[in-house]
Image 1 (spheres, one colour):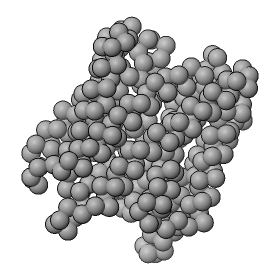
Image 2 (image 1 turned 90 degrees about the vertical axis):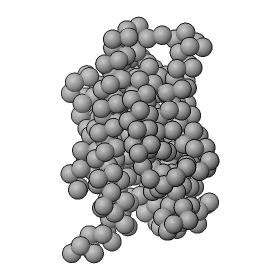
Image 3 (image 1 turned 180 degrees about the vertical axis):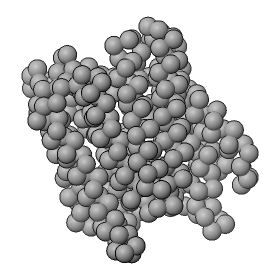
Length: 305
């Protein structure tokens, strides 16, 4: 099961790679994710229609729409950030969006935070800072001047906060009972994911229609969109099966493998430069993941042994 969690993170990295491959070909993240979301909405929609459990509560639909719209809102920021800096630090920051979600769970849902959780938050902040210190791996590079660095930092911080909305929605549904001994999330997971994908796809289609921001190549759009869909849907399938392990173990393995695999591919195949800040950013990101789940992982290891 641990292998499935690692494979899930590797599959999710394919989405980031599709974004980077599309940039020089005139295919933006909006085009890639729009295509990917149409496939995801159809796939999970079919599963939701065949699932027992009756009608879907308005709260589930509302939170899924909110999560989808905010995920779409990330795409223009990702596109702009890719022009200023490398892929690996950007993806690393996106994988840390659980940090604000953890803080929300403590403030709104009464979950307890330990010393390692606070250390993880500090490591996440340091990760964003380090991503903006050195020169980037893109042609423009974030090291061109203080103004570029501030813009890049603002983009990364925005991605961190906006990316957390989806996690907040999941936390809310997982904290609410379905009246039958389970949670709303467990009972309506497929419907939630299908609605989320549908919201992203609708926003992407509206974006292209209103701005006339058509991609330079529909062939590349379809190819990269299907590539992202394969990574996203396969990763989701692996992650669901790995969920028999404690959540902290699954999340840590998934996030670490996604960060590392994206960095390796970006450096080896996409020509991303590896500076000291590149390594430091990834190290802080991995440290934040480990610290956030450290107490639960230690407890799990002690229980197994």
